[in-house]
Length: 388
Image (cartoon, rainbow, N blue to C red; front, side):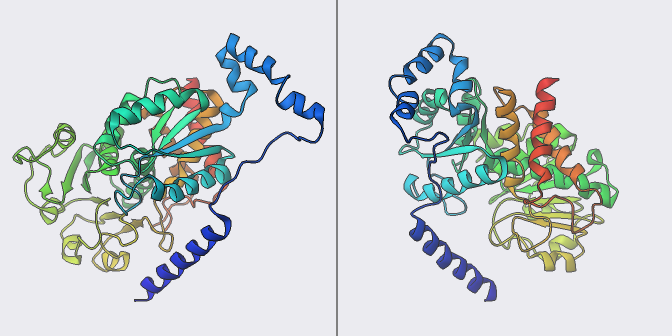
């Protein structure tokens, strides 16, 4: 009851704040405009020479405009937070919020763009044609499975396109897991990881963990374990099955978690019981990331024997928060103008985050979002991989 009251209070405060300021962002010029000479330099006639310089060499757009420090934050409103398909207008407050985080943490100017279409071909065409205006694109709150295809098809447009709901979560999960497994003395190659939720975050996490070296990953959706015996799997689930569930397990979440070493929940609240946690292997690691209500309350998981807990919430230790990665990733990518974010970069970022925790403990496996060293460490990881 108390938690509901707190969240209601935040909701009321947020509405009041947004109504007062009519949103969270504005545009501020870098150059003064006080005289006719200023006007002649900023606009006509002086700006014509700037345009002609870019016409001769489009790379000059990164030096003569703000493109090198500008990211488009793009959504179609089809999967906004945990609210579902609420449309582009309703997505705008979230995209504005993302723009604020870009500026606050990495000094990047981000422009929220909410599209009045949910057709994947149209989205790809729009973003491809917007590319000359930006140094990078952050895809946000686009529903699975189309988000996978949209991101993949945009990898050739010459600027980095990064779907944060997929890879941001996956990278921070891996960073926390690196420290968590070290704490409990387990080898990534020898653990069984169960992921509940086969959407954008779950699929990306499974792929990244497999690339990192976790050999045994089992995925579970609302109908049970993703296995070859199920006739209802879409193409995305059929594809992820090629690298998961090597033991051909069948059943539900409880069946999957028997003797498991790690549980990663990116699904729904209150689907895990204390008994299920007790059925896991020794010193189990439990990441319950459903927001605002996790798959199991951390205090119940600890009572049942969980050695390490992480959540998506700020009021518990070990918050798995995407804002640990996307500002630094784009800062690094913009600084060296890399055309795409590779899997090697993602793993390097996870290691960089893990290494920022000098003395890991059960309550401290991941840096704080406001740690000033995070953006620098993440951006250096990106630039180091790109330069090598």
